[in-house]
Image (cartoon, rainbow, N blue to C red; front, side, top):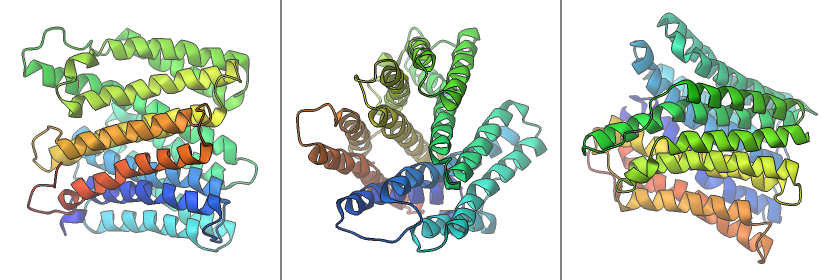
Amino acid sequence: MTLFSDPFRPFFLLGTLQAALAVPLWLLLMSGLLDWPMVFDPLSWHVHEMLFGFLAAVLAGFLFTAIPNWTGRLPLRGRGLIVLVVLWLLGRAAMLAPVGPWVAGIADCAFLAVVAGLAWREVLAGRNWRNAPICLLVTLFGAANILFHVEGFEILGQRLALAVAALLIALVGGRVVPSFTRNWLAKRDGAGLPAAFGRFDRLCLVLLVGTLLAWLVVPEAQATGWCFLVVCAFHAARLARWRGWTTLAEPLVAVLHVGYLWLVAAFALIGLAIVWPGSFTTTASLHGLSAGAVGTMTLAVMTRASLGHSGRPLTAGPGTLAIYVLVSLGAILRVLAPELPFDYVGVLTLAAVLWSGAFALFVLCYGPLLAGARTRAPAA
């Protein structure tokens, strides 16, 4: 079955379906229009499913597609991939079912535990030490999910998961954004190629790790807020070194820079929310990281990987461009919703429609391609 011939196929499709459906479902639950008995309250369920449902699926799809290139070992496919997909689906069902917290927790946490175990096995067997840090981050992401299920540690689990997401974007994005930009510009005899990875990039990553550790331990300390603002400045400079403005002619490349720009903006928002609490709410700043950076970067990676691994031209059509516009517009409205002089619920609903609409459009445009259709994906 073609759907299970590559890890990115089922997980990108299921992850985007989750993102397209979970946010509208949360709005129905929060408004009282839908009453559904679950382990978590509606807000906690929303946070959990965006991190450990949607993001976990995309992470698994990316990871097990990339690992064979890292290690030279055979990819996960067929029965093994089906088992992993079933584990993910079991977790989603458990989070919606009227079952006890321990049953839901075990069913939900099993997926990331297996993902981390398989990733370590492949990287160690392939002696691919360079990517061991990514395996460590996946393990920490799984630990964050466990913390989320432990009473009293939900907020810590959420912050740890977001910290891992930020590090993954900074680490993996620091490879793919300048690499794909360089390749695209080189084909066009572009002058002034992106800066190669060097000491400055290492410094940016070290500063980010230190700042995120401070955020986990003393999240409301003024020093933590100032660290975020310093990190924002360093990563803004890092992004500028990749010369994203030269890629505007190809949205498939330019959107990678937009995704990283969202990460830079999220650092600024989190820092401002801590240093000057009246400037931005904590919720708004965190959505800069989740809806903005994670949402944009996952779609950027999924669209490119889906086209590339399916042998399609690496260029963005109208449908793909619309996906990019919708996700950023939705994220912008979600971040600014508390500050705008309009009805908050109305703005929040519009933001949800735009953001979820981006993922629904991905399913429409790329679903046939991921499922193995022989014809081109419509309007991709």
